[in-house]
Length: 357
Image (cartoon, rainbow, N blue to C red; front, top):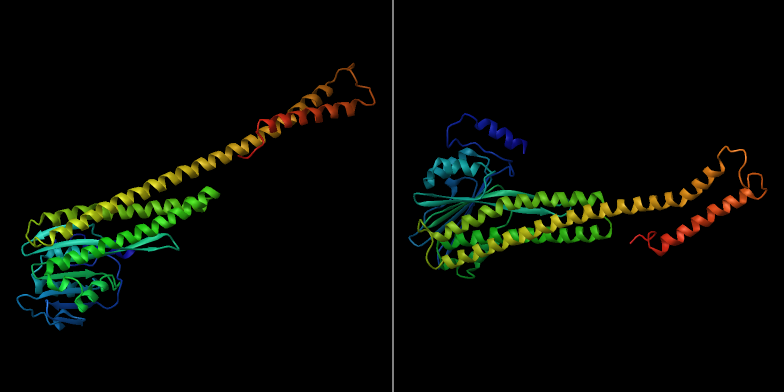
């Protein structure tokens, strides 16, 4: 995070489109991955420079280039020159703090989303930016590091399973988007499991550690909300297909992704409501515990109050008092104290004032 702040400081005063990496450097060596395919054949290649890739493609070929590592502005400038990308697009790709959005340019779409991962041990999420350029016969993806998130799609393309090889770049873009959205379901499921565990512990015995866990998950769900809500609007914009980058046959698949984003929003709001309810339960439990302790102290004080009254009466400095010189006066007073305390204890017990439930 500090590196991000320093990078933003370097951008102050620079012209729009200046290529400065904003964010954490997540990989030491940038790497390109290329897939070029049609319904008959597939070509795959990796290189550390764009110039090392064979980007010559036929009329019906679909080209997918993925770049791991966004910390090299010179490499990003090379990609921009090769595909005639707008300087503002390159600037946004290098700025890894972007919220999900969709921008339309002449000849391509620029799409931004976020990949999330969840650490169950610390109940914390981490995210990285995924940028995508969608053209009529090519797709460019930019990731901060190698995560293997898109490997299932690569394997489907290699084995020619499904219809991905028979469709164009629009279906490839849909498949990538579908993987990104499906990842959110995994994260929400993991957070939901931790919420249920916290709720069980909360009902058994509320502790400050549980309260800290609730607040931590509330912060993480807020972070997810800032990514999921804009993503729904992005998918809705893709469905409108104003630029004509998606074929008519691909639109139903995009509608399915939109339904998934709606489901994500509903699931996320349910989690937020659950966490808010857990916080109310914690506060109620603590308040109930304080009430029980105050009630116990009150009962003890009331049991000793008659004894204090009797001792006060017999301690008055009058010269003539009943039983003052009686040999059994002390034991009579103690018996009165004990009898009244026992009687009051029985009354409290019958009225369940001594019960903890």
